[in-house]
Length: 185
Image (cartoon, rainbow, N blue to C red; front, side, top):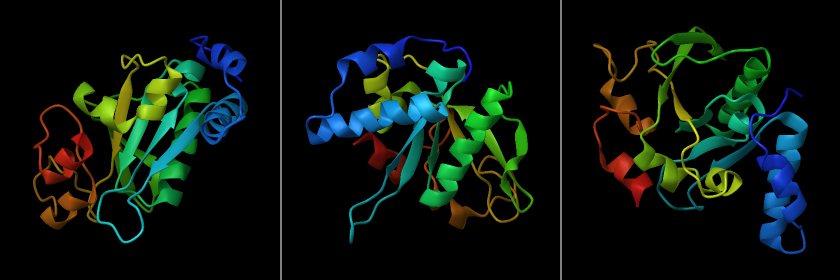
């Protein structure tokens, strides 16, 4: 594993115990970060409830000095795969650039784009990440955004509007819809 950019993992490993259920949850996060360079949290609506699922990384900033990442509206398995791929790319020296199309995350000819998340969305969506960084919400975070089936992104002409409800848009300049408001509540 690469040299760490913060000392959070070592600090928390010495403080966290797995004696209770929440302690086991946090111990698992630390174990994953130590082993893989990140841990992944999937937030899904409860069974029989409406809502948007999302997934995010914990530990990428600590491990590689690169932004944490959040994906909304992706199936859990795909989100997990994308975040693991991002960690592998970070380990190889990848530095994501905002608004650049990357073709090797989804496959099938679809690109993804990374954009910095607005801080007002980081706090309510990435709580376990905030725990890891000591309640300090200043860690960098990008949203990984996927296009519609024609590989058109929400800010581009020709985007299929029926896809707008599939992922929240958490970056500067995105329209705030009930989907984004749901994540803020």
